Amino acid sequence: MSFSFLKLFQPKDKIFQNLFEQTADISVAISEIFLEAMKATDSRRLELLAKTGHLEHQADEVAHNLYVELSKNFITPFDREDIHELAAAMDDVVDYIDEVGNKMKNYEFTEFNEYVLKIAELNNDSVKELKNAIAGLRNMSNLDKVTEACLKIHGYESKVDLLYNQAMGELIRNNKDNPVKIIVMKDLYEELELVSDKCQDASNVIESIVIKYS
Image (cartoon, rainbow, N blue to C red; front, side, top):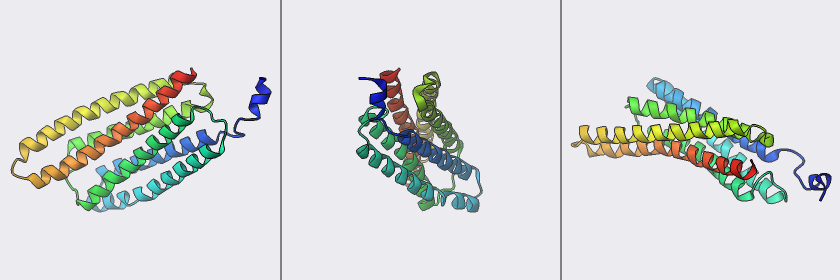
C-alpha cells in the first residue's frame, strides 16, 4: 500500500495533538493559579482558588471533544486505547488540582506549612514537564525530549511521596489530641499527593507511546 493512499485515511489535521496541547495548557494554568494561591494572603487566596473551577470546566470540554474525535476518526496518530488513557489522565490532573482547592475552601484551610507549599511546587514542576512531554509528541520528532520530561516527572513524584510520608508522620506525632486536624490535614495531603500520581499516570502512557513508535 502506497504512502499516498495511506494519507487518505489519516486525519486532515493534528486534532488529537492540538487537543492534548490545549489540555496541557489548562493544566499549567490551573497549577500556576493553585501555587500562587498557596503563597497568597487569605483574601487573595480565595479569589485565586475561585478561578480553578472555570479551568476545570474548560478541561472537561476539551476531553469531551477529544472523545468525540476519537469516535469519528478511523485512523489515529497512535493506539486508540493510548489516546483514551492519556486523555483521562490529563483530565484527572486538572480535576484533582481543582478538588484540593475546593476542599481547602470548604475546610477554611489556613495552615500553609512547608509541606503543603513544597508539594504544590513539585506538582507544578510535574505539570510543566507534562506539557513538555505532550509537545514532544508532535510529529514524533523529538522523543528524547519526551523521555527526559517523563523521567523528571517520575523524580518529582518520588520527592512528593517522601514529603507526604514526612508530613503525615509529623501530623500524627504533633496532634494526637486533635483528631479533627489529623483527618482534615490527611485528606488534603492525600489530595496533593494524588495530583503527583496523576501526572505520573499521564507520563506512563506517554512513555508507552514512545516505546511503541520509536
